[in-house]
Amino acid sequence: MKTNTWKTYALWILGTEAVGGLSGWLTRKGADLYARTVSKPPLSPPSMVFPIVWSALFALMGVSAARVWQAPPSPERSRGLGLFGTQLAFNFFWSIIFFNAQAYGLALIWLAVLWALILWMLLTFRKVDKWAAWLQVPYLLWVSFAAYLNFGVWALN
Image (cartoon, rainbow, N blue to C red; front, side):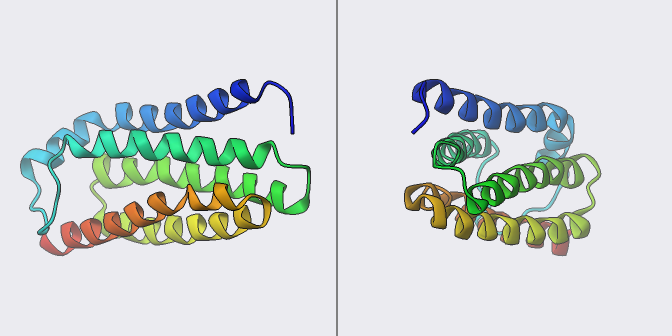
């Protein structure tokens, strides 16, 4: 276990939240336009739900990555952290594709790749730290729901 555990957790959580916050900031106008003009599928939550859910998910993602970071060095640890960064980048750009470009079909394909990356990361994290893997389950479930919403928006618009 590495020293300064709380600092490690703080850095991973803040870094992950920063990626989500920047994505939200960059897509705020597109998200506002989306909320006002786009036909949405059944079960679409109110717009205010998304930042709350994503903040919680980014925090869980940060805790999960911190746990893996603190594990003894191994190929699985390195692979898992690499996948974490890759899926986080895919997450970041999905919002831009969906909200700013309004390319709903491309966003759906992008989201399918993101879902596969999250699953791969989760399975890799499981080899390093089982709790780190479990902390990713809500994220995988939410992205599954997001895929339903993305498909619905693409089909309706």
